[in-house]
Amino acid sequence: MRRVASIVLVLVAAAAAVVTMGARSERAQQGFQVKIAFDNAFGLTEGGDLRVGGVKAGKTLKMDLSKGRECQGRTPGDGPPRACAIVNAIITENGFKDFRTDAHCDIRQQSLIGEYYVDCQPGHNKQALASNATIPDTQTVSTIPPDLVGDVLRRPYRDRLRLIVAELGTGLAGRPQDVSELLHKADPGLQQTQKVLQILGNQRTIIKNFISNSNTVVRQLDLRKHELQNWIVQASKASAVSASRQQAIAAGFQKLPTFLAELDGTMKRLAGLTDAQTPVLRNLHQSAPALNTFLTKLGPFSEASRPAFRSLGNASVIGKKAFNDSKQEIATLRELAQGAPEAAKPLRQLLQTLDDRSRATEDSKLAQATAPPAPDPTSMAHATRFKGFTGFEALLNYAYWQVMSLNQFDNISHFLRAVLLSDPECSPYLNDLKSTPTQRQAFKRCSDALGPNQPGINTPDVPPDSQAATASTSNVKGKKGKKGKAKRSTARNTQVSGGQTYSSTPNPTPSASQQDLLQHYGAPTGAPQPGPTPAPSGGSSVSDVLNYLLGR
Image (tube, rainbow, N blue to C red):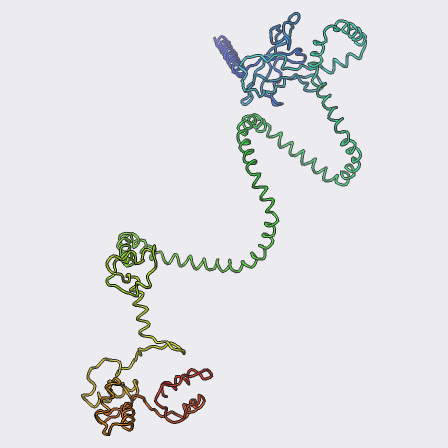
């Protein structure tokens, strides 16, 4: 019983293996299938390599014979139908299944021992090749094995070849087109050889120079043979690393066609950018000398600016600390700024009102003379009721006139008409300073700053000339005449009031230094005569002139 159970188990395992292998085979058959027509499929085997651009992308499945249209070449219908080999292949790798209708395939030799493979190029046509479609023989090339060519040189094949060539010469004399097509498709190596020979013929001068300079190259290689050896060692290591990453490199090659297709649009835009940059580069080329001069002179400037940048760096440290310390003030300003828009409108209205000529409160000829002309917004043309000053002009006039009322200007300097005293006895304002002896003494001490003659305080004010003449006439006895006229003229200089004589022209006694100063200017040394005080000229110090003017 156990033996029967073992046999049944073995059979079930074998059936499972067969099913699994069949599924794997079926999955292996999935992919992009294509049929390729060759004049000669010599050397190909089932399961051989199918490469796309040199990269293994699939394999060959089976080979059949056909006389269909794909085998008739470029001139179908001329003579009996031609036969060709149909190679069924499958592409299993992703990224290589995008075949076009102009795809081209060749049979190539893989090694010297007779291994062959199919190498295809996907093509560039816009129309894609359908799955399981056939690539005609006009887009394929077969190969001539070199071992068969070598066998021709041995007997009896050599004699047989001579007979065949002689017979073929007679038989093919009337079929030149077929012979031409046969030679054209016989071996692509002949075509490439012809191209190589043409290139070598065009470059024979370069080849000649290369041969003549080969000794120099060999000599340099001999001098640097250690470097060449090191390069070979490094190349060997690079090859070993590349071999260890063969799968990654193969995956990169598989993704390369998609990458190139996506890169095409970018390269077109880059070409447009390059064309657009041509004028800029031309102008840059013209500006290159000036730019070179600028960069040359920029070096000393940069060196000289190093201390400034260091100082700026030190200042930034302090500034950072200041900003950190001012966070609270900034927060306060932010809270204040939130209500600023509400005050901005009234402030704007106030400023506009102060700058409005129609808001003047009275007429002013000075304002009319100094107002700006039209079309200035503050011209007199905009005045409606009064032609006077605006609010701003009134504020500025007040400051100007107030300063002019407190200051006086002469040919020496400015001086204030108001004097500020800081004295506990004289500074306070008192309206009665003659009631007690202490008050009278304070009045005498505080009034000394005004001089010995104080009009309106301790002496009467100077009357007008008419009043002085009348007072003098009433106090002087005499007859009319020249003598009386002289007395009236002299009386104008004095006036008696309460037993005190007031002189309209003070006559102080000059000191010794003042007498020297007056002699220097040519004035008499005695008491100064009535009349205008002579103006000082250059040559004396300001302090001497002030001493003279103040009677010190």
